[in-house]
Amino acid sequence: MPKDTFYNLKPEKKKAIEAAFLEEFSQKTFEDASISQVVKSLGIAKGSIYQYFENKLDLYLHLKSECEKTKLAYIMGLNRKDFPDFWKYFRKMYEVGVLFYLENPQASKFLTAIGKNTHSPTIKSYIHDWRNQAHQMFEEMIRGEVKAGNFRKDVAIKTMSFFLVSASTSIGEYMEVIYDMDFNKELEKGQKDFAKQKKILLQSVDDYILLLQKAFEK
Image (cartoon, rainbow, N blue to C red):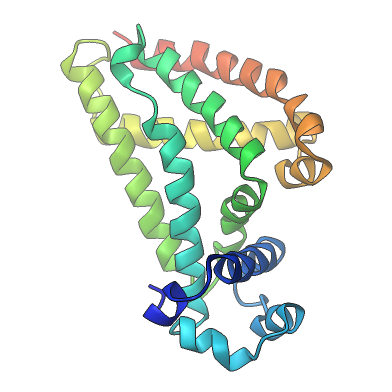
């Protein structure tokens, strides 16, 4: 976590530092990201970063935490009870996800780029933990649907969770392979161009839901 010296900075300076490093980590792997290059562009001393953070990993984890807090705020605005079935809720999560991407392009690019660090000696263990957290979140969702009698009971909840997380992840891969859509490049073009892809994305989600319903429901 950041040191008190970082929190004591003026808001505009904190924002400038975070924005510059979000861009750096979005463009490069963790190991290749350069603190020296970023501080040079900011016009500050390299040593000052270590007055704000313990090390590069501490800085990276802070940025991830802040980006995920922003994204989670969009998701937490949804209440499962407001939807007639789980799949309407599932689809809506993608809709608010698109809204998050449009309104927070820098944070979106950073979170998307985390996947580039799968083999990073520093980050890969964290990625494993983050994936476990995602599975646990989906397990809770599925457990609630099974308890309510909406999902089948003859398949282990952990199995269904892994299947659903994998399917959710593969929708992004599907868009890249079938439609040659690179989300980061689309974001760089601007909101208007990215928004044009929303219809295609949600149609793909609808197709996935048709298949998932057959697998999960009684």
